Length: 302
Image 1 (cartoon, rainbow, N blue to C red):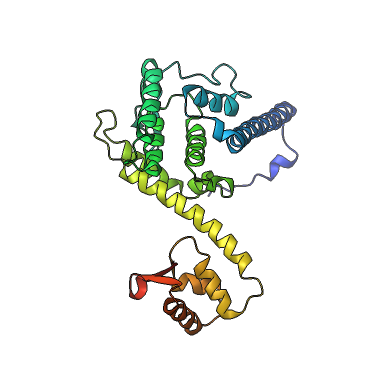
Image 2: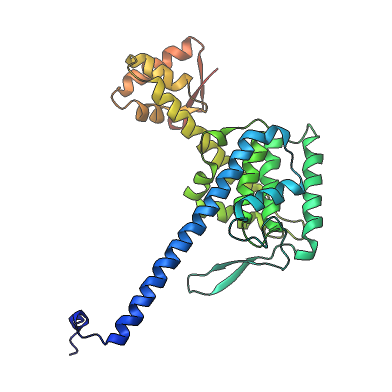
């Protein structure tokens, strides 16, 4: 049977191979540094764009120039020729199947039609925001989905879409992105995000797509953001408080309806019986209301 032993590599390597190996190692080190610098520039550009939105969103509006500016800021340092410009060539959204084959997941709008598609997208947004019967919070995920289906840039569409999301949330009174990273939430549940994106983009070109999966995913992301912010606030409010006051603080400071189990998880040293007593007292006083029943019951401030 063959014996496998690579110990000969310690001292029996021809000089020519050693020389080439050293050259390759040096080139790899340089390339690694170059990639790191490339990534750092992209991250820096994204942070700059995010800071601009944080500081100037009140005076900014959704325009073609805004989208081009966001793209220029996040790609300008690494792709000068394409930064801040719509795609010149048609692109495809592809993925790899489990057997290693490529699959076209979606065919975006063609390059020649992109400027007109972006113009129509912006006009549709302006029309919707003037209609009081249309919930603006639901317009945002629909618009972002359409932006991703247009896929107006050769690269950076995902990052621009997240900047666009944060900007529109700010613009319409939802500044959660100032405290919690929406992008981090998307990345944390990226499989669900891309699954919803694919479902909602089916039959998009024929105007027969269903926005619902992407809207639901968008709302779940926002809910998790507010829940995380809520948890941070509650953790601070519970410091050195009495047991009953701590339970009361958990319920009254919660931004979203909270279950008995969730309350118990936040105050693990307090018995379930005490939690139940405090909830009963708060209900009698009219400070909270109960939603649902039995295990699905949740409590929220009135």
